[in-house]
Image (cartoon, rainbow over all chains, first blue to last red):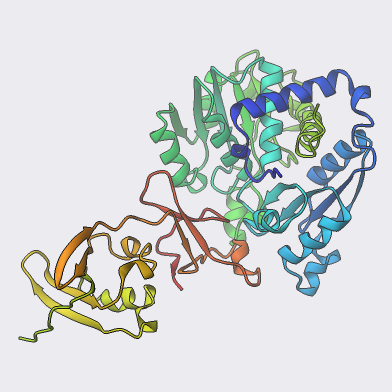
Length: 304
Length: 145
């Protein structure tokens, strides 16, 4: 039985199959509308996340399956002190596949170790968010045609931003990618990721000002500075509006640059940018449903 | 000078960093053995200045020695039969360390999940250990349980 804990759980070839399936679903959704008839997805969300949870639920419903679950720890047995391992053993009897989000890092892995059904990590604290990474990869692959030969700028909270960590690790398996890491000093990528880039011989640079590098980028991946990742409110307030992407800054960018964002956006992308053709973050959200549909089918052995 | 006699059957852990023998004694479970165990602390050493030595009169293969290199990579293992050294072993770092180190990352699931093992895994660089669950590096924040 397969689970998805990290984007690296799937080989590049397996990911390619997944993306091809997602593209087929996009082209012919009617062919997949009943593929999961009689199947149930459990969404176990120990912390609020409307977007990811609804994306999973939409994916399952579009495949003809049904969903059940909880959307915060307060309404689950966790508030009574039940362990993750006990919860998943029970959920295994209620559903065929489980998407789990948990504020503690590694919780979905504990679930997978005790589960009788496939478990998908839907985000574990500041650690991993593999389905967001799959979404990002599918979006880039679809809009650029290939997952190689581009310069990607990752901007914002690169220290706590798990989407950024997962995306960098995933992109390190493709060829000809150059990373431009744009963040304030305090929010630079963790040391282990820098070591991975250095050991892998990936060209990268770390800069503070977005304006200095925006003209070089093929993709700009913006992230939000997340309050819940900070222990200190003062640091959060100081850093939350460090970057704001505006039309004025976009004028310095390439005509065909893609602006991506895992959403929700707060202040880091001005609303005026939404009208720009390069703004692809809402398209990206749509790809998130297709890739989750493909993932559910793959993990349930219903891809063929 | 204190003299501890030779052993006939068993093994000797030599070149232990001074002061580490008690940690090794506990982590290898030598405290649970019925056989003779000699612990020599702060012995003079030309190479190290001071060193610790452990002499154990039991079959080495009945013990799990995998943690040894993690505690002290420079320890030499001499297997003794009939009073002579018949084999020298070079301890290798274990691929996995279970319930010896504790993950102290407050965001890790091991901080709240009941009955969970604390597992650290050797990474590809062959020298760094990371928590299996949160991937926090073993270091200042994580200590032996």
